[in-house]
Length: 362
Image 1 (tube, rainbow, N blue to C red):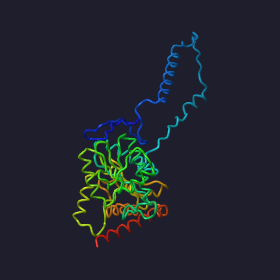
Image 2 (image 1 turned 90 degrees about the vertical axis):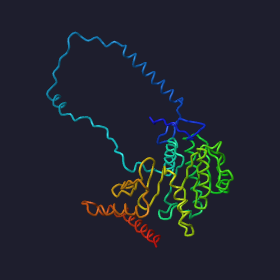
Image 3 (image 1 turned 135 degrees about the vertical axis):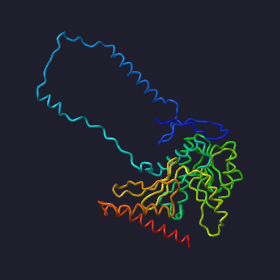
């Protein structure tokens, strides 16, 4: 059975406390359902029948026991009979922690967030980047028409699942009032409220239990900092969903960069999935950061090559992958043809990453 976790939507002075059974599939109510009652009734009938069978007297045995010696063939057959086969147990794989789909990824992110909130965390970060909308060198991309809407739909699915787990009042704050109004018109009333960074009062400290800031960009970093500080004063948790606060713009001074870095360091990355060609960087609280690459021996599976405390990125990630690529060269019996395709993609990514790092240093 899934463990029952008392999840509190506030750390200090919360108005409601709910018991939610948190498992991989989501949250289940603690009240007995009609189907559970029917199952219990069935168990009671089965127990009554078992007891009635125990009261039945066994048939009277004859006074003389019939003794019979088994033929030698039967005795030999029994003595060499193979033992019954044990049921096969599937061994866990390292990549079982990776999601099977985008919907599964958002569900796991909401589950990890609910777990962090139940432990009293006030500042969380969730990063769910899909390959077609994310560049490992420059970050999230909105190159094509409709790409931004895909991120809004991801935010909606995540917040709906998170609200069902916490059962609190969730306020989703979007980058501007126009986006908030458009989405509110399209989606209608749901299980979360709308707000924007431009609002005079982005959230309600008396009514809201959780604030989710959707895809904040560098232009709204000052508003994000202010909302986070105001929410902390009211003990309201804040989740940054797919933040893009870091910027490589030349005009930004060192002091502003340090301010953003120090601000983001106050948040706990609760769930992160960042893909690259031939692999992904993954994090799920409370586990370490994990680096996966395509497994050359199992199609469609990934191999865990490194676990680190800090996020591996830039030259650190390139060194991890390069170390993995150099490993098989000294081994024996490795089929080079089987490794060609996935490793070529990884090697290409390393060259691009190193080229990008050199351009920044210049």
